[in-house]
Length: 300
Image (tube, rainbow, N blue to C red; front, side, top):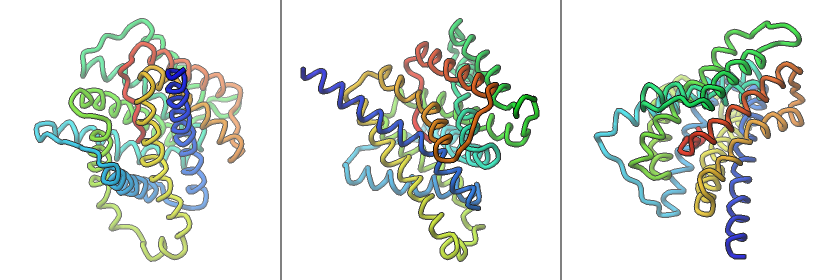
């Protein structure tokens, strides 16, 4: 009975985390539609996330540690997997919409397989190869507009860019997770990512942001708090009650929930061919998660 209660608590926590993560694309797209800059969105998301996570670590009295010898790994992890990921994802949402943007983001596991093969010398198994082929096929289908294959090429590049940078994030995260716990990984990841993007904040029109766009700015700050605060807290807490494989089964439903939310709230609709491509990518995610129980999927 006690084990059932523990599992129920773990499932409840990971479901809450997944719902929060799923809502990020809808919030981001809504703010962008209202006229907010993708560059400002990216910067404020990371900075507000850093402030949120710092407060949580102080309040919860979590211990974190850092080793100087890993500085280069941390910079690659944070700048490519954090700063560049935030930028490509925001511009992808802006150009393609929430549904296509989040689908392209979840091509990441395929890139993870390829990068890990060269960087970590991991074997590409049959399941992983099938998953990569499914992602490639699904990506072409999702990019189709209506019944034709007319791509938004710039949007496509940003979308694939978010998948590649998320893939780098996952591989470097796997490397660093051998030495650092989840709180340390999240903190230093968001610290270096925020520092890397902070110079662009000097180019913002703060007068306009604090007057005309104040409501949007508050939504973006809430966006960072929601992802790096509530979402990560529930996600990390669920790992106290569930095995990593059980957590990832639920976490990998995020793109499905995100597309459903985009359909309900933003009235975004996928064409039949795009739905097929989406299904291919989702199947690929589960194949890779099953083949690689150490796949790192922290939110960025």
